[in-house]
Length: 455
Image (cartoon, rainbow, N blue to C red):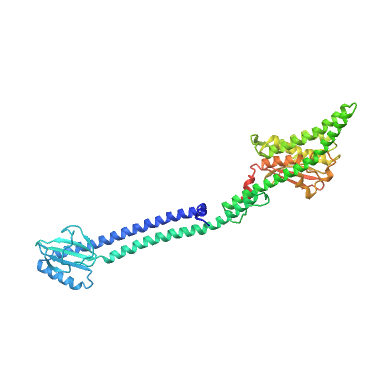
């Protein structure tokens, strides 16, 4: 694990940033406490010195010397300082024999450093008496200095501790996401190497990494599905298109060496080529839909109109094949869709139902609402689709064994599935006992599919 790797983790950067902000706040708070405490204690000492100086200065000279002597006798710990100097500066009485340099008479208090004259750090105040003598009172502030040192040490070490704790928490909180990112990178490399079944590891935290992994996994499901369909389509194209092309070539070869040929022979070749072109048109149609680039035609669509148009269009075809086509609208609903594409999907379902229900069959197309979601239902009473093939029939060119004798390319349901995916609707194939029931769920506000894994 390198620092550069940790720095790329958002959790680490946020933890470090908030740790620094918090540390600066604590430092500012302690600095304010230090400044206020030191200032208060200094002002308190200065106030005491002024009070004592005023009290002593008010005493007559003989009384002053006596009071200074009594104060010195009681000053066993040498905390207080008293001294009296003659007008010429000579010492008269007291526990300080020389005036410190810089001490101004009748000026502001002065804090002196330890010296031979005064071995302690003291706060001193000088006053000139009416007799011309100079009175100096002071107090040892070593304890005040120690208190300031303690506060400063607390300020320094608390700031260092907070910063180090912030770094430690940032590292601890970042190890998990960093490990998950490394696993995701490993999975991405395997996917890039061709393992399309590999998926991003997703946990139960439901955080941003899990949301991203879910989205990527959904995308990979779609990529795997599309790649599988492309592979299957390629194999099926090679198989299904070979037959009509082989027949067309055989007929052309026969005509090439025949003395004469009829229009029926040419029509047969044209029919074979048309079948090939129809398959390619259907493939291009599916590719266009799966590109999901067509959203310009989306608007509010009345689903009842879609159902009624499908009934009107396929009623003659159903009658011609001896199939009963019935329409039913149990709900009135709108959805955001491309009306032409949605009608194409429903039409393909109805066409399939008529084709596979056979003579005397019955096909229903209905609009209903289930749990507040409108559904378009196309149902027939034909042979149905085996449960194991219901997912496969939505793939390109897939045709069940029993359906191979029925005309068709196997692309109709693939187009329906592509249109449904474009709209982010849901398509399900159910057993109608007998027959198959195709249901297109058309919510008014379709859920964005890429977001579903993270919901």
